[in-house]
Image (cartoon, rainbow, N blue to C red; front, side, top):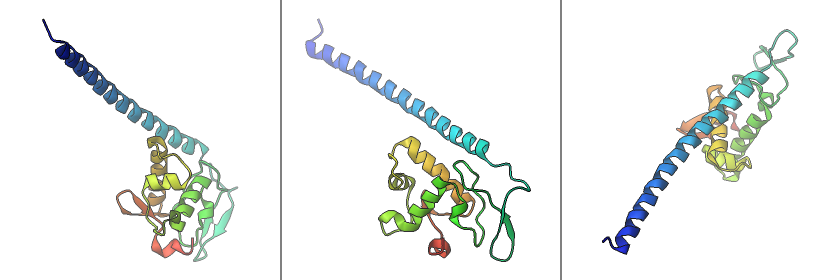
Length: 164
């Protein structure tokens, strides 16, 4: 006849295995959910993208070159940075990221990771929010607005930090 302690250990082991299986399923479900959040944000940005044309106002930048400028609205496209182009052409979410990084998030240092950025923007540091901020920061980096000094550490390039 099995001992009471042996039966309890067997049930504890079964419960622990079940918890491990459920935790793995939860992590997988969260990863799928995060991909959908990012996909929805991306599709929203693409659909909100202005169809630029002859009606779009233009602004002169340094060197006398003319650039098409549209009003910055949520979901609008991030233009490539050029000399003389101000962050005000960016959508509000992107402007907030630029402002936080230009101020150093109150930390006295310019480079921040996405979790710090999310907190500085008043967002909860949960994976979905942090990934949304990461997506925007990566887009700003790809378009020349930000620098990624080390993987995951974003800052306003030194040449523009004072003049943005």
